[in-house]
Length: 444
Image (tube, rainbow, N blue to C red):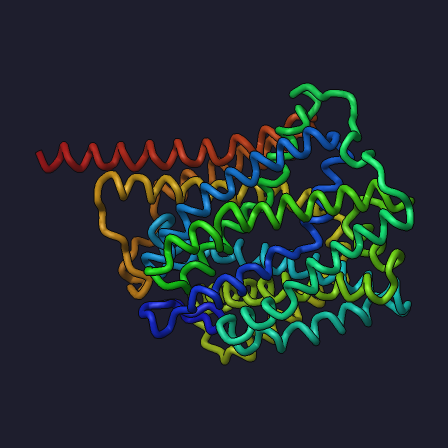
């Protein structure tokens, strides 16, 4: 059983979240300022038309993949850490947990830095001060556990976020004029050799955020099996991504091409909202980043605890892990982490997409063979130290993907991100089927 406090293993309906509570907790992720920024940045780079095509394909693929992963987690109550023991073995699962923790913490740093920048834009003062403020006020919100707070926090703040963005659109259009420039922006067509076409580059860029597939499993493990159909359709399905990716991107693109001087950078959109609307703009950014960072902190710290307890057999009170996670986030904020966002996304695309592909292949093969699901309550000793199929598929695909991304070739990042999950799925399926064939021959 998972030893995490923030994301406990749900084994009965009495410990699982109600339909409404889980939906509100998950929808905290819909308001990441990153989604507003990245849509605008891709529209500037590839043209609005190609960016919107890529976004449509992204929404479709995310909805389909998370429908499978959410259903599996809802039925079996398995978190990423627990499921990874079947995919990779107990040692390999530690690596998956570490990457999950590191990525969630990275996003907590990034989203927190955006809010700190907005505070500084409004009030001035040193960035280190605002970094500390962001960490100190966020930590208590997740210290009591995801089930106790996230649904309530996000339920209260959801209308403020969307209402604030709608006001920002009206305000920007009234102040600077409404036009169709944001929809008609275009750039010279790019061939594959140059990193295009634009719609494919957009699709590949959003694959760098496949960490949301891992987020999906950890949240869905808290749901009730009888709510599976609802959650697969509305909580973790297409509706969420229409709002998270589609609506946020459209607003980001409009604001970027409407507000003079607004840059589609990591902090540019937040700064633009503050410069446009003052304290009200700061409120919108505050609500946005509070909602997303409650999830980032909870998942980052819970997986950090999972890794620490399993890798080093260290048993510490939950408050100690919370403080340790908060300290790591603050120290990373002091480094220029935000400057390396796109590089980090590319590497995450190579690492996380491989895990997702292996997970989907594992589920498909088990359903085909009617194999039993290994319960999350089983101790680590029930699993092999290493699952050769999973470790080989993940390491080989990630190495090739990262190699292409870092090759310096214009088409390398797009190709590396796309090739990684295909390779991972093919290698995992090949080894699994070969092993099964060998076993059947031996038994025959």
